[in-house]
Length: 411
Ligand code: HEM
Image (cartoon, rainbow, N blue to C red; front, side, top):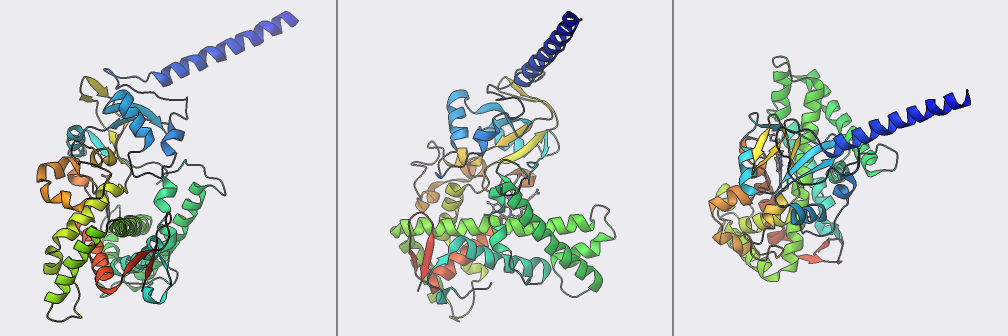
């Protein structure tokens, strides 16, 4: 009897071991109708997620990408958050992929996804204060209201939370980030509810248009509209606040660029007939050096760490095949920091944009993505950053107060 039990357990364990071995083998060697790109699928289930999510303080290419680029070249496979992924660092292929929306790829997102009188403050945390201003501004433009509680500070760190390991447990960054998201969604659904009760109004904002369309378009549910408003608030705050902050940091570190930019804005103010009038479209178009500064900041900032697509067909590339259903990850930083395109790529040099042509811009400068999914807020963002810079340079004097955390004093 005892021997029977022994055989029984031996068979169970052997069966389990064989299935596990088989599963690990299949994990490491996924099915493909061709040859998969080189790379490692990492540990079963976990893949290479942990090293992907390690944060880096450097503006240089993330070590996860840099190491694999050196080892495998411009195309490699990996596994992130339980999904098979191909990372592509080839600008021509990435340009091609971004034009293939709904043909070879589709959109994919990671599963996790005050007005203030500064002159009266002794010092300003630029990123968070800018986020608060942007929150009020975007709320006014989108929903014609200024919410009682300013969520700019909360929303300004949300993307960082979504790019961490998705562990929903009190205390984790991911947990805190989802709590902030819940709070913001409560706000946008409250504003939506209120507007639905008042509809029609003469506000003429995006919310009015959406509420008007809700009855006619099936997809425009209450949930969709409150998520869309939340998404647009995030899109404004999480991108423009760091862009302006980083621009200030680079300018303070580069006195000659700061001087050149200040002169450009002084010239604009002097040319104005009414000294109190705001920035006009002609003013904006004449800000040549400002545009160089914005490009250079976006190039070095790489605020969107990756552009994700899901393949909807097998895609052949350079003798390899990216299978249907895999995630394709494009890393803009690799193009933006390529020394073959940008000499001394880690240096802040706005003047370099004088000689950068349209072709390079199309393939090697993709802070706003590309193809028909390119950022809808691109020009709006450029205008806002230019206006922020104009106000700073014509009304304030910036001083960096501390190394490390970028606090800016105004007097
Ligand atoms: C510095 C500022 C910004 C940067 C660097 C930026 C970057 C990007 C990028 C790279 C994409 C493409 C994502 C993809 O292909 O998967 C994108 C899409 C998008 N952005 Fe922005 N963005 C910025 C500001 C804004 C602002 C202010 C708004 C709205 C007010 C906005 C709204 C959108 C929308 C709606 C999309 C999706 C477009 C679509 O799927 O058709 N963005 N953005």
